[in-house]
Length: 86
Image 1: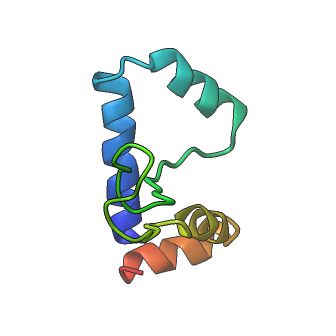
Image 2: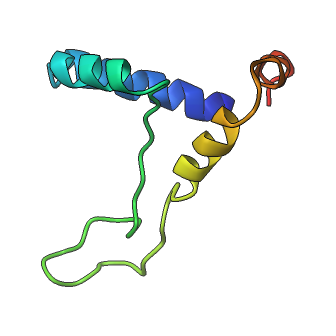
């Protein structure tokens, strides 16, 4: 979870600074209780034309589920998990 939080923060910074998507972030923050970011790759690599250069190897596809599970914990449970590095 610590690594996921770090990646989420970096993706948020990228979205704001590099993409200039301030309105997107403001809308997301105002419409949702919390907003987290993750990178997901269903294929694991970019296809070469219509063919895959390597076998399909999904990456980080469970991260959204892990975010939902993390957010379903009470505030005190989240605090203690973060305190002990989980």
